[in-house]
Length: 241
Image (tube, rainbow, N blue to C red; front, side, top):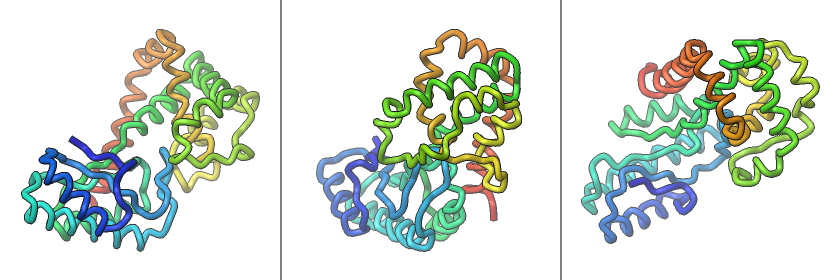
């Protein structure tokens, strides 16, 4: 069982009392996701004071370790980072803390896979490129509807969003450069990326056309998904020195 961030604390003291309550109720929690300082917007980097996050992260690991011993909570209880994908600036502090404390981590990255499917289709060109251009066009028109459920975890400057007619004229490389999370690329647009992050509903509504495009381009999409999850996330958090 996981305890989600919506009802979890911002201070180690609050975390301690919640863990005590979890133990009292005999809830078999395995992960808990406290609210840290800063913003954890969908699909883009952490926005906030990295040093402050590092201190909070270390404090919370210590509280969990103490609570496991004090209250008999599951030994595999660990911190969870929601939304954890693409938070590259805090992966170094996280790695240092995990190694210092011998702790585990749940890093929530589910949504970032969808954001590799889209550039994979863009790279394929032709009808697949036109499909993702149209997904963006619909998302742009339905922005209020799509963003409403995620208002607390996205921060889109609508003046920075390209017009759908401009995106329809983009090449594969232009679409991919705007979308993929490469902060050194001047074409990277975090507002474009966040809108597409919440636009998965538009792809779902495309039904068979979208699924057929995925099947037809499985090789390039698989390569991007593997690179993203393995090299950008797993290696950075758990394997880099």
